[in-house]
Image (tube, rainbow, N blue to C red; front, side, top):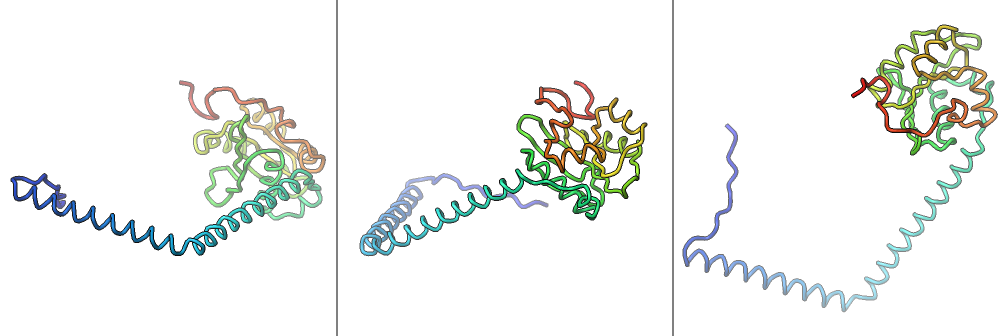
Length: 227
C-alpha cells in the first residue's frame, strides 16, 4: 500500500504558536548574520572576487568568439561545397547519407542523419523555417541500378505518420524505374535521380529550387487524413 505523505499542519494553541515564532525568529537572525558575514568577506576580498569575475567573463567571451568563428567557417565551407558524382559513387551507404545531410545544410536547412536499422524509411531529416520538414530516403546504388516503386510506397507510408514530414524525397546516384517516377509524381513523393543529383551536388542548385518547393502554407502533413 502506498505510504501517505505527511502534511504540515498549522500551529494550534498559544504554546505552539510561540514555539513556531521563536524558530522563525531564530532562522531569520541566522540568515541575517550569514548575509552580513558574506558581505564583510566580500568587502575584504573584493579585489580577488573582481579578478575572478573578470576572468570568467573573459573566458566566456573568448568561447563565444571562437564558437562564432567556427560556425562562420563551417557555413562558408558548406556554402561553397560541391560534390562530384564520381566521388559520391565511391562513398559508403552511410557516408552517402552524411553527404546528403551536408548538402541540405548548405542549402539553408537544419538537418541530421538518422539512418539506421529500423529507421522507417528516413535517412536524413531536415527542417526549414519556410518550407517545413523534409525526409530523405537515400539509395546508394551501383551506377546503372534502378530504384523501383516499392521504395516510393515505403516512404509515402512513413514520411507523414512516423516523421511528421511535409516533404518526402528519395535520392539515388542511380536512376528510377518509369513506374516509380510516375507513382512518386502522383503521390507527392519527390525523386532525385543521377541527373538531378548532379545539379544539386556538383552544380550547387538548392534542392528546394530543383524540386520547385514553395513556402509552406497551413495544410495536413504527408499521409495524414484531412480533418
